[in-house]
Length: 94
Image (cartoon, rainbow, N blue to C red; front, side):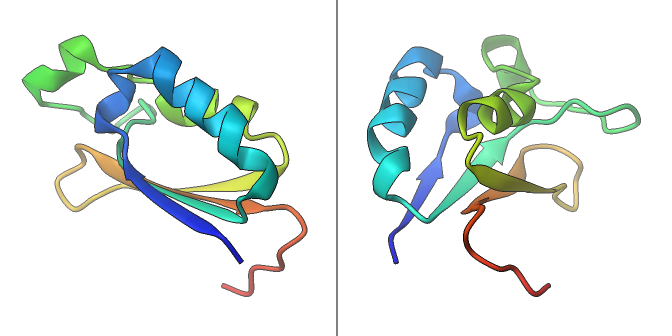
C-alpha cells in the first residue's frame, strides 16, 4: 500500500500539483492533503492566503482523481481543511 501526504498550500501551485497527481495516482492508494479548500456555503475562509489559493480545489482534485473517493473534513476554525482520497478498490469501513 502506498500513501502520499502533502500540504498542498491551498493549491497555490496548481499546475505542478496536477502534474504530480497524474504521475503518482496510478501507483498510489491513498492521498492525504492538508490546507485544502472546499468553499461550501456556510464555511467561511478567512485567511489572506485565499487570494492566492484555489477556493474550489477539493472538487477539482475529485475530478482529477476519478479513481478515488474523496473525503473532506473542515477544521475547527473553518479555514484550511483536510482531505483524503482513497482508491475506489479499497474498502473504507468508517
